[in-house]
Image (tube, helix red, strand yellow):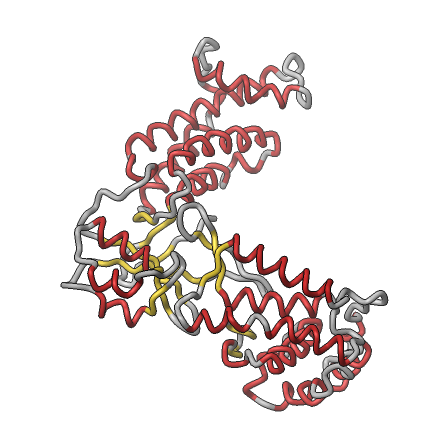
Length: 403
C-alpha cells in the first residue's frame, strides 16, 4: 500500500504522484481478482499500462492532495463491474482487444488459447473494463498525472521528520516559492552555492520567508529497517538516504560480516580507522548536508570496500554465526558467553562490562532486545559507535537506536 502523508496544518493528506498509479493497481487487486491466481496476467498487463502513464511524470518528485473518497469510488466501481465481467461480451474487433493481444501472447504458452477459450474471453473482458475506467479516471483528474501544480495559492513542501531534527530541502522550498510568485531573496542568499541536497532546519525556515505564504509542510518520516535505510525520492528522479543512516549501515555491516571477530589489535585499529573516516558525513549532517544521494552512496561504499581490501580486512575464514543457544539463556551471563564465543571480547575488552550494563542501566535498556540474537549484535554496534566517537548522533529509545 503506498504511503499517505499528512500536512502539519491538519486535515489534509498527500501522496506522491508516482504512487497514485501504484495505489490504483493496489486497489484493483485488493479484492476478488487477487483471490484467483489465474488473474496474474491482469496484474502484469495493468503494470505495463501503468508504466506508460508513469513516463509522463518524467521521474519528477511531487506531492499532491490525496482524496480518499475519489479513489474508493474508483475501487468500488471496478469491483462491481469486474465481479460480473463474463456477462458482457467484448467486440473482437475492438482496438483494445488488438492491443491487448500483444501482451497476452506471452501467456499463451502456459495456457494455450484453444484449450482455454473461456479463460481468455474473461481476461479480455476484465482488462477492457479496467483500462476503460482507468482512462476515464485519468482524463477526469489530469493534474494528478502530469508534472506541475496548478494551485498558485498553496505551497507544498516536504518536511523530513527525524528524531534528531526536522528539515527541508532548500532548493525544493525555493522552487515552490518561485512557482507561487513569492519573494525568495532571503532564501537564495541562505542556500547560495549550496548543493541540491542542502537542507534547512525547520525552525530556521520561517526567518527566510517574506510575508505569510500558505505553505503546507508535509511530514515525511524516513523509513528504515533495523540496519538499513529505505530510499526516499530526492529530486529529478534521484533517491537519497540520511547521512546518519548511511554511517550506521556501515557500522552494522562490519558486525554482520564478522569483520571484528578474532581480529588482531592492528586489524581492529585499521577497521576502526576506516569507520572513523566517515565522520565527515556526520559533520556534514550538522552543517545542512543531512541527505546523501544514491550516486554518492555507491561511491562511498566502493571506497570502504577498497580500503578494507588494501588493509587485508575480510570476513574471517572461520566466521562464527550467533548460536541458537542464546535463546535458551537470555541473561547477562548468556550474553557474555556468546560474545566470548564470537571472539569479540578480546577485540573490545569493554564489551563484557557493557553486557552487564544493558541489564542494569535504564538508559541502555533499549539495547536489550526481546530477540537475544539482536542483543548480541547491539553490544558490538554500541562498542564500535563509542570508539568511533559517534555516540552523540544516535539516540537509544524503545525502538533501539533512533537515527
